[in-house]
Image (tube, rainbow, N blue to C red; front, side):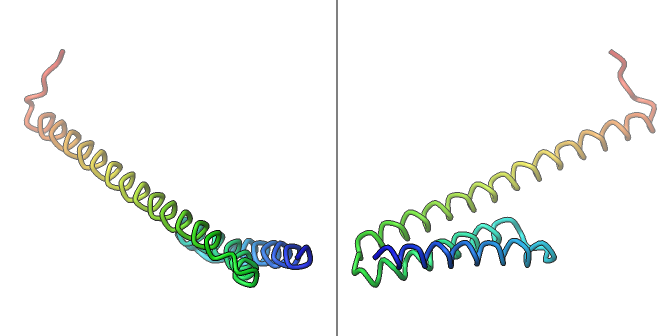
Length: 109
């Protein structure tokens, strides 16, 4: 049992170190990096839990990870939309101001 735990931890550590140095030279979106890091942790642990027949624990880990990952992705998508909306609003304000300056209709307050 302890040997399996140690082996899973060693495999996880090695895969994470390999990913760290391999991904340094590759431009991957942050969400893809998160997925790869989670898989590096979850797959060895899942293998040990499957060997032990700990199916409920395995289901708990994967359900929590999948839901948490989805919510993180949804948060990134929402943040991206908010940023885009703010940038569009700023461009619109700048365009209006530029038109007013060029037309000589600028209001001074």
